[in-house]
Image (cartoon, rainbow, N blue to C red):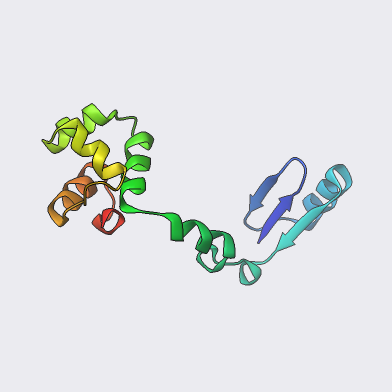
Length: 116
């Protein structure tokens, strides 16, 4: 079960006691409650499909680099390539090879498919 309090947005997951929900509704007003069966798979939403269509290997590479706090220079050193090659791959001006995708996956501890 999930309870979503609209303002401020708070999500509470798990077995939520009815008396807690009653107090929460009294305090916050609008509380939406859904069982696990009613929850929607994010991959089926229009929002996800719109954004997934915009995901490119280079954009994924940039996002992972930034999430891990690496500069282009630092990532280039880890990959054993020049910084301008990292920039070119992030900007879709240079393809990411399978071998490079494997190196990226190893560095970022994710699947190589994200970079192909």
